[in-house]
Length: 147
Image (cartoon, rainbow, N blue to C red; front, top):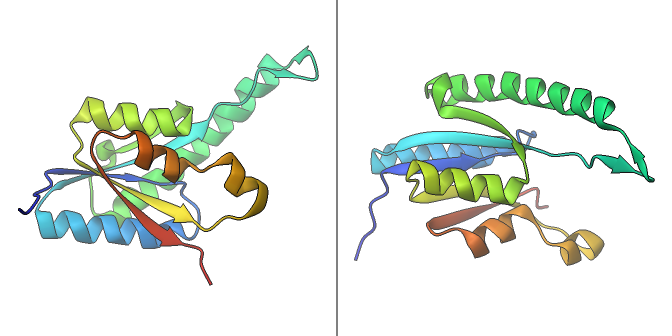
């Protein structure tokens, strides 16, 4: 039984090694003649720090991170040859935003980078692992940053 994908979602952190993941998603979309979308999630910052409310500063930092993400996403969309309207920058909890987006847009394959982590980062889990375990569609975790 072969699976045909019609809508592939690239979930990206927009960092340097994300290009390999983006290239894989673009290649798969071309092979499948599928629509390709991309999402980058700016993780929401906590509103409290040491029992002090830091809302104005938090909002400004988040705004700057979203603006930087939007600029990088526009560049990525251009590089991938997809419309800028298919590049999304969202603010929230990364794993949940990716899953909700995929379900809401009828995505049938999520392509995400998977970093090799050890120690505390491994114990806390990763976005890729969370998406793999929670998504209702197929997920391809592309190994990056090894070596």
